[in-house]
Image (cartoon, rainbow, N blue to C red; front, side, top):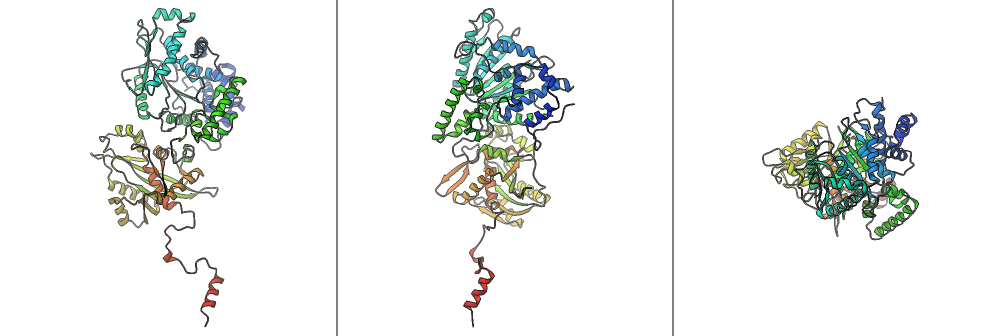
Length: 637
């Protein structure tokens, strides 16, 4: 029986897990039997013979563990077919590169991609991975690998089949034309190679400007774009979504991906590949999938998403920007040879220095180091800080705890948010704040339809409601019911015996809800003016505390992550406050957090923000001796 390995456990890392299993001799049989590129690459990465990121190591660890499962786990249904690996590699050896017109020797990491995509199989013989992600920094040969997979699917996997749909899709027409142009060039080059001439002539394969098709079998490989969105009628045997991380078409890509996968359900041996470099906006559909698969791979013992392959080459830390020796993590082409390494490093270093001088370093980190960042202008919080603040469980029982409450009320399409900010001191004596939130989602501006609302905002509200982080409007008009929020809050505070230190709210908000709090509770209330002068200090202090690791929240709460990621800074002569860059971007939770922090930031200090000079003692700051001297010298008789 295989060990239960959970890489989310405290003190456990993928390196440690691999060493533990290796020392037990768990991989001896695997490494003896499988000598293909994917297995060799995985071994070299985990042995640290190749410098690699944690995400790459997770993929490699998954590969080796699954090879063990073939013989050690009776419930594991997949196999690894070395003949399929040989077939795709032999094909790749004949496939010309679009730049040179000749086949190029593939590096080990590129060969490993082809082997994993094609080699893993279901009991039926169909491909195991119905979906896969391949993400790597710019100019690292992903176009060549993509072309090999696309052409192989059309020429080999459709052999003997009729009326098969294959596709290449990009966000907009201009992008799809460029990527498809490479494919068209590849097909034209193959048609001149002796090994393929007969096949092209026999099937009358025609590489046209928008489609590669054969009148003999009606199989077609189409050029498509997300902006057109015309995907409903297709049942793709194989489709590649290029630039899948695009952040200008997030909602459209999400919708179209759903059309693709639903259309593939009854297509045998189907596969959907997402190819991309990281993009500025981490609300991207691809980023969400990468994080989901990262957690899946960390929980090795679970058999979730077993049909979804994730291959990501990225940097582990922003600090590596200043350490070019680590850039091979996101730029595996640096491992080609010494000449290539020197030339590429020189170019990358020059690019970094140029972007740094222009004040645009995040753009270099984003595209050339394949790191998801918040690189929008005036971004409030760094994505890395937001991610690191998420924890699996609340570090204490909230029952009987002191709490600061922040409230932000909706206006028709905006969400309403209540934030609970709990001060606590961890086991190391460090003062922190833990945040719990609950949001109410209106549907009044979405035709009272949650599906429309989710597409407008690009947020999965139904999932958040199932997890207890949100309540979706249920009345006939889709409005938020103030009474329902009030009763929910009263029940939450009462059931958990919370000690409310302050209830803070937007000073412009004079709703019935706030009046109920004032009149029906004994909580101290504090209206917070929403100008930069009032919000400057809590806004800057919250960012500082998050950067220092003094803020925590439940990482399963995607609403709070979404809100934190989308807040930008509005700056004027009086200071700063948070804002949003478009109407459908939701930052209501951040607004409520800042309201709560307006008073909460003083919790661990000796400062009283409501201090009044009238209450000041005339002897403040004087010692007992000084007070005695004062009376003796000024009131002697």
